[in-house]
Length: 102
Image 1: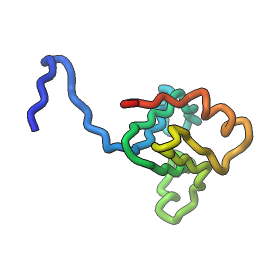
Image 2: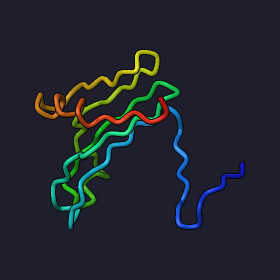
Image 3: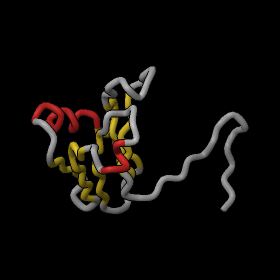
Image 4: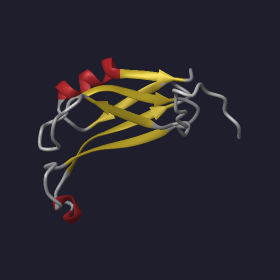
């Protein structure tokens, strides 16, 4: 496939149904990172599990992190469902969603 883009841009290809959370800039992985946007690429249903660990060790290799919430995109309905996590975060997710390709 050939894609024409200006020399100062890099094309990014994303699979339909992908859910991509974007975080705020942080100085270190030890700092807590807040989610600033959740991009959903329409075209298919999709699922995403948001995972959290301490950010500094290899404890994740022993499954010592936690899945904080599940996101589920229904392409037919055009909705993003949220399960798990605290009520504050679950409520905030709706305001962070940006659907691409719809």
